[in-house]
Amino acid sequence: MTSVPADAGAASRAHEEQNALRLRYLGIDTYREPVIFMRRDCHICRAVGFTVQSRVQIADGVHTLVATLNMVAGALLAEGEAGLSEVAWQKLHAKPGDTIVVSHPPPVESLPHLRAKVYGNRWPGTQRRCHQMPSSLLRHWTWMLRWAG
Image (cartoon, rainbow, N blue to C red):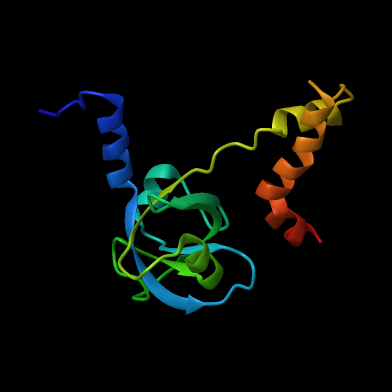
């Protein structure tokens, strides 16, 4: 017999518990790129479909950031553990043993508008929205610019 959460909050907490990992300090410098290191056989990667170089959202209850996923094999990380690059460690204000929740990042708000512009349509909405689009894209896609160049 399975129990059904009584409310959406309970369902959300149950989901977070399933996607939670303990942090282990690895001391890996990736320059400015936030990177999370997870085991290749991690239950979250299998359940959610994350692969190497996936962009994932990491949250510790206070801070949130989007990072690139790298997978490790062997004994570097124990089951239920994850490591972060130095820059990700600093941005989360993390400490060894902290619990994080790993999930898909939110969609880029301006992507449908950019897609419309690529296909010859006008920028939707006000002029203010047009100025917000590039900052939204840069905030979420700086990693693409680095890899493309």
